[in-house]
Image (cartoon, rainbow, N blue to C red):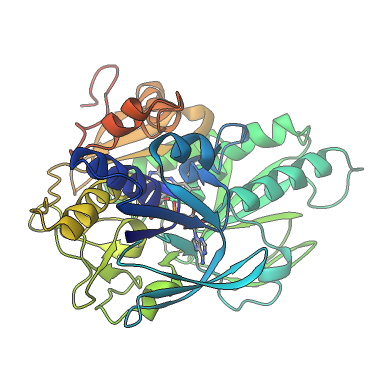
Length: 408
Ligand SMILES: Cc1cc2nc3c(=O)[nH]c(=O)nc-3n(C[C@H](O)[C@H](O)[C@H](O)COP(=O)(O)OP(=O)(O)OC[C@H]3O[C@@H](n4cnc5c(N)ncnc54)[C@H](O)[C@@H]3O)c2cc1C
């Protein structure tokens, strides 16, 4: 029996595992011929892109419901090391240290928010990087809402005015209201760059600025966080902002475990993979999602996003089985790129193309965002093998739907 191990149950790993099971079925093999084993530190698939929302009730989907119907085994464990020469994974599970051998590996351990060595950051700052972190933030806001008024109780400092930080800040007025934190509310977005959304582009920036201003989100631009305390934040400008909630959203980096393989990496620590998702110079290893970078249209490398992680996963899953069976591999090619940025009660921003031309804004773009976040990126939860396999086919979806009149 051959064994395929998939590390990570996020957008790339989940779809790699389902895609592999689909291909195994297609070639008439069973789990007695090819074992597919998925490992994650958590027993759920996190719809990570929704971790900034207040309602977290549908963002952690139990893995057994998704994997049992298709004969994919799964284990809970912390991946500690990968030895690609011995084809072995080192894990820590609830029963202690373990090793797991593989014939083929799909590395899909994703990315994590970078936490620089700023005094007080580790102890006092929140983030929305994981479901656990998102729950912690929500519990904190709820408990502040029940506490007596005190300085900074209704002030939130969000650090990092990129995609995640903007979404977090824009959602915060509603979240504070839900938590009962309405009086003298302040939301402050801090970034070392001179403008918000510098990574999002010049077309989008005026829309973001309009939305933030209508949501009464203040900005502190061109400044860094010098230190964080339970009572607030010291900025490099000398200002102290009394804030009992500081949310760190500044910068993403690929899983450090990408560094345990010999393959070349980019400045985000991502392994360079070919159009078949194979890691260059590491036999038997595929990588997908935020841990990998692949040129998808002959020109542009993938962006860390679920938009790319999902198809990368489906193709990695298909190809890892095809490779094992000596069958032709399928290249991934994606000819479109969109971004959809949630702007809270103001609406959203929908852009198309690598120059991020604004197509729709406000309520129209919000409808697109909600279709993506609540439907399009969800796996079928019916428990039907056919539904799961149909969703895991190695194809590229059409761009998401747009609503309302295009913006002129
Ligand atoms: C708040 C927020 C909003 C976002 N919004 C958008 C958006 O609007 N659009 C978009 O396209 N993208 C968005 N993203 C980015 C998107 O979530 C990621 O690009 C996507 O999750 C990448 O998928 P992945 O499978 O590569 O990694 P992940 O989804 O991060 O999955 C990695 C998996 O590996 C597991 N894991 C990691 N390390 C270990 C270990 N050592 N041992 C065991 N298990 C491990 C994790 O538990 C996780 O299940 C957002 C991200 C955040 C945080």
